[in-house]
Length: 203
Image (cartoon, rainbow, N blue to C red; front, side, top):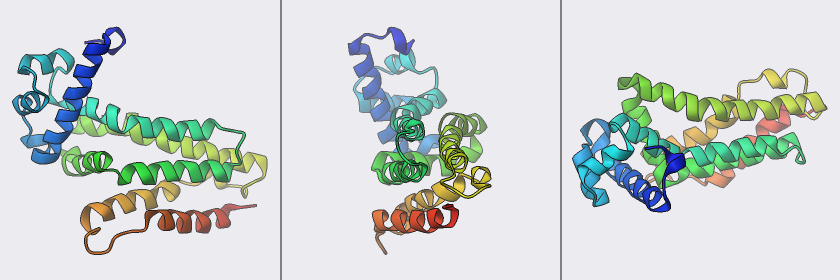
């Protein structure tokens, strides 16, 4: 079903199915999840799920779009806000990544991609194309802009964006595995990381 031509009622039904799918994927994993269980969770007929998503892979792609894509859009918006300094734009971007990855729904997606991504190459490529690559490009734009304006040292535009996003991703993995043993102060971690890195690249 084409999202652009859906009625509001159909949009709500699709959102219900996406929410249900996230619950089922979280509970059973992607491989163990069944369309029947998603339909039951969403309180719709199995055939209704197939009206919106042709298969389970497309359903997970829909979940990723609904849960993760808004965070990518926020990172891209920060890159485009040239009224701010490059450093402040980077702080906003990493804050978005860190906060969103720490949320329950994003954590579910991250766990699914780590656990199931290597088994499903198309899903892995979809996630890279739709989520990872645009986010890294947006961070790279801020680095290049900061170098061009003289705010950052020469060569900063060639740095790997992962240097900036890596701590937020590590924090998300920590929350999945170790938060019950030693909770993270996410704000302090991201602040310490950015202060250290930005100090190193400032002109």
